[in-house]
Image (cartoon, rainbow, N blue to C red; front, side, top):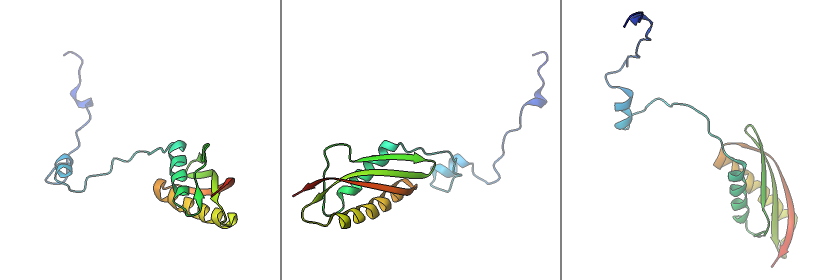
Length: 125
């Protein structure tokens, strides 16, 4: 072809080891992490928080949307609606819910739970 210069084509990378990265990956060796970003939708965080609430003894299911999440970078703000089983102390149940949900959501998402507002929407037997 007229006018095509071969010296402008970038050089190919050469593996420094004896095996290429694809071969290392197939055999279970350590391959380079490609990096990238992982996005977690607020609805996923809400579902994780709602499930964590149900794991706490003394709570019951709430009929309407039990959790709402707002995210800003790696920070999560949560609003929870819970039902407390009678005759348990509401403040103690709310404190246990707050601690458990914070631990569980941080563990599952890797984000920091900055604030949790709790509304006790029902008292159930």
